[in-house]
Image 1 (cartoon, rainbow, N blue to C red):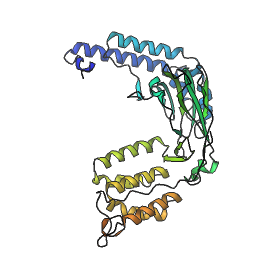
Image 2: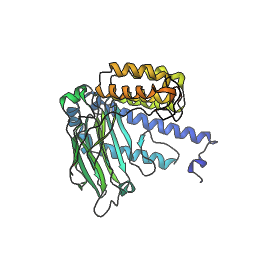
Image 3: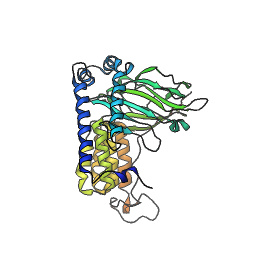
Image 4: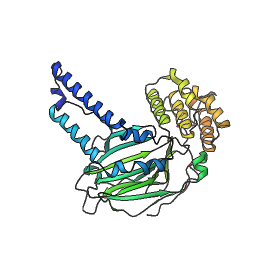
Length: 360
């Protein structure tokens, strides 16, 4: 199918320079406004060392009074009207194929402000998963779009926040009945314990849902947790630190590329402070190079400070150590560790999950 990018003025050097100049000037104007004494980035920078709930409270006026946002979007539209191939200096996150996405309005340290758009087509089915991310958030609804809001909650102890979280002992998720999402309302959430999902309203969501989302997510030893809403059971755990997430994506890419020469990088990450990051790195190393992973699995099974990581490492180590490089199937050959990343490579054991229920 033809794309509008087929008409990009590749050979029109003067036009391309004019576009770049216009974008650069707009970006400089926004940066100047944001870093002024009363600017958004100045306000955020002043909150670098305060608790997350205090940072959210002090930034709430930027969500309730959106004249600054309207001016910014108007300037971006003027830029596009002057040349449809110009790209406003706004970073996009998410989106694609009708999925929710947004524009990053400010991002510094642990604090991020985004404009989130949920297309009405994304409201055709309710999400079955509630996700809890350590930190605080404020959601200011600019247009409810006819959607319904469903709140979810989970208990987290001080010991779990301090690094003692285990999947086996995780509390269940509880969900409230859905209610209409109201234009103009502001939700302030402890996102380690509170989450929300959107679903179609009784008459169906007829418009896009638009809201400002302010998140403050300082480094935390508590992982990101995903729960099945219907049952309340914990279904997934991942590292909550942003730097750990970036490294996990890099390791996954290296594994997909078959870069066995990068195995030392995987080994380094198995010593991460975050238990979810340690186990993820080990899983990736097992998939990349089982023979290289074997001794490190043994060490993890014996010495890792997290009980479920030790148990998963021990179970995976036992599978890798079965005779003939197979996974215990009848007819295996002689002794020796598994060295092949072929289909016989054992799947690393998951972290344990405990029973839970989720009454609506």
